[in-house]
Structures are given as structure tokens and as C-alpha cells.
Image (cartoon, rainbow, N blue to C red; front, side):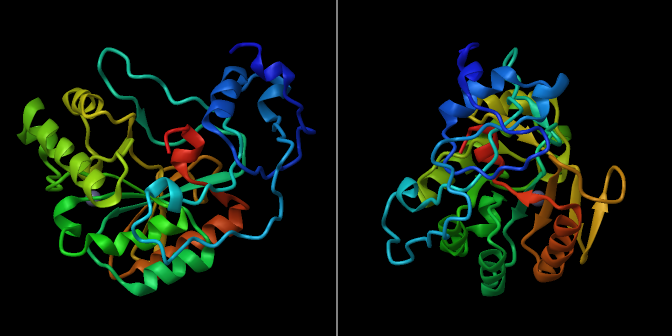
Length: 283
Ligand SMILES: [Zn+2]
């Protein structure tokens, strides 16, 4: 694999290039030339069939029984310049932001309590793909609601069954594992795809949790660097979005205001919203 990237054509370093269909195999081949050293870290690979400016392909709303792979839109994306760390010693890696040179940002939306048609409409209008970290007990009254986001290109990920924000302190390994596996199984049952990413309720994690996450078949624990909350942006670092930031939102009553705050920040920073799973090659 180490020689794969040498055959890839590169653009001028300052050029932004939107890509068409980026396969995981291509991404895996390119990650060998990453961790940013010298000029190579700013290059962007081109694909021959880059679908720059091509018309959006609408999702198929009339095919609710189709398989997820058939309905999932393959999003435009940048070829990753970051490789997800592997599971080492049984511990899933923890990601707070992605160190990337690309002008991209990742949107994640949690829980699933408030389900409004408006949120579906807004996400479609802005054409945002997002990682949806859903909790079984908050979506069980209407899990089908989230199919609309799935049809837009978003993916359902794991945010446990019970959303116990004290699970790290209160529970041992096995009970944490049960709460995580329960959501894995529910997601497969409801959405036909096994989640690859995990978000801890409340954000706290431990080695026991990381071990349970890996044992459940998940690839990473995903926290966040910034959040849209109460109609404004909150940053852990600085006062604007930066490339590679992972942004947290929630399915709350303030969804429209939160998304507007995120959109303003995203546009001001000149970043494109890219699906985290696509970038990591774990879609
Ligand atoms: Zn949550």
C-alpha cells in the first residue's frame, strides 16, 4: 500500500478540489501519505471522474423498504489526509477533532428527543450530511422519523440505550457493554446498518468504556470540539470554526436556531460540511 499514493496526481497546494465518489479503498491507500509534513500535506488528490458541480441526486423517497446501501447517498468528499487510529490493546481510539488541511467541518446531532418536520426540511435545504448519535430510549416512540435524514445521506450512530451520563462512574465494563450493544442491535433492526462510531452520554469516557466500545464492534469514541447550543456557538478553542472541527448539536426544540448558528459559523469559516464516516472510511 505504501506505493499507492505515488501514482496519484496532485493538485496545486492551494487549490480546493471537490471530489466525486471517494471509495474507502482509495482513502486507505492515501492515508499512507498523510501525517502532515512538508508540502505534501496540503495537496489534494484528484479522481478522473470527479463530479464537480454535478447536479444533486435526489434520494429515493418512494423506496422505504430498500436496503440502506441502496438509499444512502454517496456524498461528495475530500480524500482524507487523516487515518483513524486502530484499536490498540482492546481500546477504541478517542476523537475530538480531525487534524486535516482540508476546509471541512463535521456535524453531529445527538439524542433524538424532539422530532420536528422542520428539522428534516432544514437539513435538506442546507444539504448537510450528519452523524446522528441516537439513544434508543429517546427515539423508540418514533424511530422511523430518522429515516428521512438517512435518505439525505446522514448515518445513525450509537449513543447508548439509556443515556446514563454517569455510566462511566456508576457502571462496570459489562453493564456499559450491554447498554452499548443494545443500541447496536436496535440500530441494525431499525436502520439496517451497524453503527461504527460511539458518543458517550455527557461526553465522559474511560478505558472500560473504550474497551466496551471496541468489543461492541465500534471503531471510535467521538467527542466534540465545538457545539451549537441555545441558538449560538460554543467553542472549546478560539472563537470560530476551524478545519476538522467536530460540532455537537441536539434534536431539541431549538433545533432551527442551533442549526442557524452552526450554518452562520460554517459559512463564515469557509468550511464544507462533510460526513465524518465518509472521511474516516467507516460509513
Ligand atoms: Zn446525549
